[in-house]
Length: 156
Image 1 (cartoon, rainbow, N blue to C red):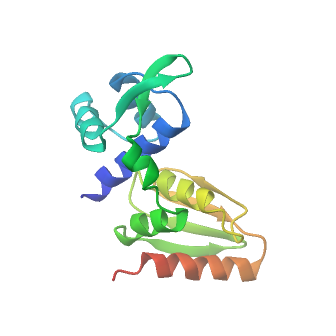
Image 2 (cartoon, rainbow, N blue to C red):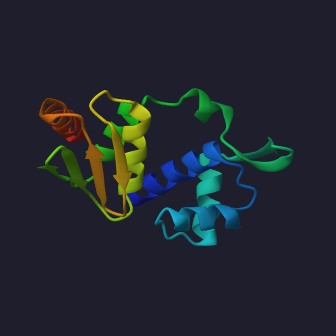
């Protein structure tokens, strides 16, 4: 699966889990807010490929992930590995901040996976379009985080 499609579908999964999304138009708008350019036809294909279903959420019909996807949820570290292994990365230190540069549109997914992983080295992260800033507590945590990310990004 191409990298941008993988990132977009990961974003769709996150959006559907986080809040009620009732229509494909609403989903496309939410993707645009996260920096993804997606036509209604692309969103329609993604909805079909992910097997999204409609169910009652907060008293309204909204998209939900199929049970198989909810039950097969991978760990934050595995999700991050899957993202990083397919992306060209530049990882640099800036004080106590780790700066990760990747493809345009990928930073939000990387930051979200880091935050979900709840790694002790990570105080918090900010993801823009192609850059993630990750705050750490000290130099030791920074080096440990850098090494961990680079190991996850290694191609097998």
